[in-house]
Every structure is written in structure tokens, then in C-alpha cells.
Length: 113
Image (cartoon, one colour):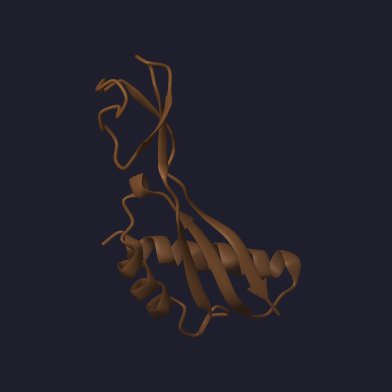
């Protein structure tokens, strides 16, 4: 379950930013998660709740923004929506798609005190 290490990394980033920006409590955070990041949203919520205990993020609301995946088809030269790597192009059937978005995993926003 790599979601545990992801949740720990999020807490580490939050604590670093708390020192740099002088805040003491996180009330809510928004994470952008793409379908190709291979993150299970429910598992991430569970892990975040566990690792945030006794930190400045304890009790914070975790909002997960699920993004869509997109790629550029090298065959038909169209931007297409994809759900996973190595999907076929829905327009021409080619498997030569370069992923342009959907592998994101980033903190978008923090609500702090």
C-alpha cells in the first residue's frame, strides 16, 4: 500500500510549509490525483487520517480532486481522453499515445490557521 508513504509525504510537505509560512493548523487540504498516478482514493483518505494524528493536520478535511487523463495521439494528432497508460486512441485505434496529463499527484490548496 503505497498510499501510506504518499500520506506521510503530504504531512512532511505540510510541516515544511508550516515552518516556512508560519501557520499552526491545517483545517483542509485539496489533493489533485490523476488516474495514472495509481492512487486509491479511499486508501489515501484512510492513511492520511492515520498519519495525521498528533500533527498540525490532525482532523483536517482531505478533499481529493480526481482529474481526467489525456494524451496526444502520435498517429492521428489529436488530444484524447485516456484512463490508463497504453490505452488505445478512441479516434483512430493507435496505441501510440503520449500521456500529457493524468499522472498528477499534488497538493493544490491548503486551508490553514
